[in-house]
Amino acid sequence: MTLSAAFNTVQSMLGNHGTKTDVITNNVANEQNADYSRRIATTQTSLYGGAYVTIERAQDYALLRQALTATSQDSAQSALTSGLKKISDIFGGNDQPFAPSTYLNSLYKSLSDYAAKPSDTTLAAAAVSKAQDVARSLNDATAEVQRIRGEADQQIELSVQSLNDLLKQFQVANDAVKSATASGTDANNAMDVREGLLKKISEIVGVNVLRREPNDLVLYTNEGTTLFEASPRAVTFSRTLAYGPTTVGSGIKIDGVPVQAGTGSDTTARGKLGALLQLRDQVTPTFQKQLDEVARGLIQVFAENNGATPAVYKAGLFTDGTATVPTAGTVVPGLASLIMVNPAVIPAQGGTPSKLRDGSINGAAYNKNTANNASFSTVLQGYATGMSTPIVFDGTAQLDASATLLAYSTKSVGWLEAQRSSADTAATNKSALKTHATEAYSNATGVTLDDEMALSLDLQQSYKATSQILNAIDEMLKSLLNAVG
Image (cartoon, rainbow, N blue to C red; front, side):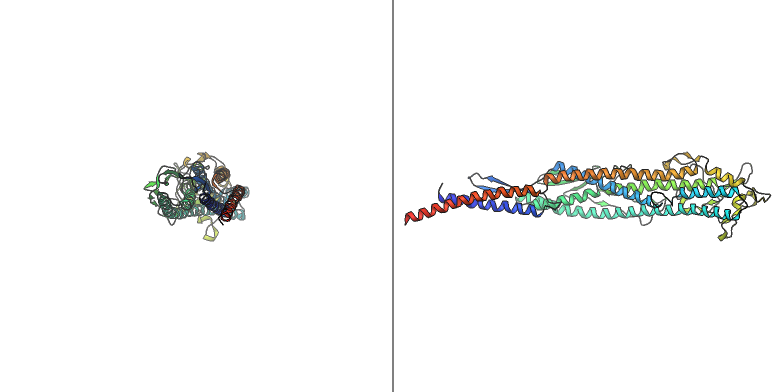
């Protein structure tokens, strides 16, 4: 090898060392960047005997898909669990002090006390007051449940807006990757940006990734709907500004295809959109049905009859503002928002509490205490018995079709807590799965300082060897110059 050839080789080696040093420095600087994939500098030999460095980006599409799936599942479960906790918090937390069942039990005790001393006007007023607490708890619970539905609807709107924006950014990044790949320039930074956007998209909706040449990505939802192919597909949604028990919210469509809501407390949804739909359209409406059934049961149990054959029943202590007694076993949508205590027994509204004792809320034709006996307790005892006697409930509320009013209201809270507890357990498991999948992907593609330092030490040793060669060339040149003169 001539001295000039040797010098050119050393010059190339030093240039390669510089490139590799830059790669290591860049890797170390991005060690905390979750969206950065490690760069790998590899020495290649050309056809003409020279050496050059190529820079590749560490990637593992199989682990990436697992990480994206785990992220989608965790995001969905977190959204559902958060919603269930909000519903549970309506009633004051673990002991549920503000639940209808708590107030119903107080009413039952108050009626029993009043039945034991029916001449006591203080006990009569107390029973009416407890009844007002029951009605108010159902009204408030309905308002809060519908507020939570409205919040879910708003979160859907924001998530859809975010998804559309992310898809537009994804197109820019994807086009940059394809352009750089086709022209042979560095596409690694654009790929980092694209992958970071992909992670954010997977939090909103489940994503399946298809890779095709030239380094192009196509995105599908987990339901098989095209989300992105060369350009973003439209994600559409119309927000509903106010929710009531009978309000039906708008659906979400991706490329014209409806997004499906998740099912179960361990939700099948992937991405928060499916979980928010489940919360808005399944969980809260089911719980609302249970509240409505408690309200219907109250009107039924406390209804008055005129004693005729056949008897005519009218709403008594509890009413929806009319005298109608709803059909047994059939949910009346929104009844819990309408139920109230009959003004006929409320002193502040000109009523008389003792009408509850006499069964005369609907007038003389319904009066059972015709002798105006102060110790008359038959009606009061009948109400207390009615609260602890099984009646028929609507099975679509996902509770027992036959239960006592007291038991049904308690099981409603139990159903909610069971859903919340199961969702919370699933959230813990899915969070752990996400952590494991993310760590596995990070271990395969992320920066490890120990590895970079080891590469740096190897590079130093290689640099020393190159320096020795350069010194040898320098000595040979000096000897040659001295020989010529």
